Length: 141
Image 1 (cartoon, rainbow, N blue to C red):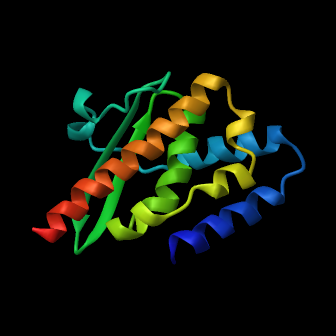
Image 2: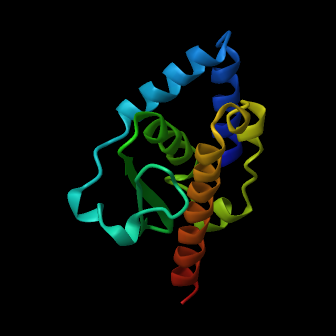
Image 3: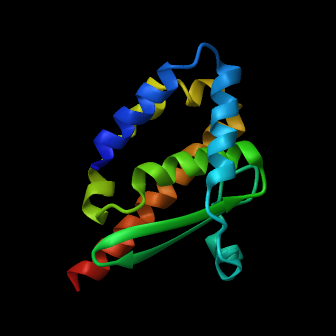
C-alpha cells in the first residue's frame, strides 16, 4: 500500500468513533500491538528529542525499503508512534520524504493532544523524515 492509501485507511478508521475517548482507547490499543523493540536499539542516541516521554526510534534499510522500529515508556505515546510507523515503515525513503502529514489534522489528533504531546508528535515525524534522508543518501552512494 502507498503512504496515501494507508493514511486514507486511518482517516476512515478514526471516522468510525463517536468521541475522542474512543479514539484515545484505539490509539492505546495500537500501542499495545507495536512489536517489542530490540533492547539493542533502546539507546540514548535513538531517543527522540522534544518528546515529553521517552521515545526510541530506529530505522534500517532493507532492499531499498525503510523499516522502522520504536517504543515509548508512555502508553498513549506508544500508540501515536505505532500509528506513524504504520504509515511510514516499509516504504521507500523518497516516498516518506514527499509524503504529506495531513491525515494527522484530518483525524484531529494534534488538536486533541496536550501541547507537549503535540510537540512530541512533530518531533517524531521530523525524526522519521531525518532517517529517510539518511537512508536516501545511502541509496544514492
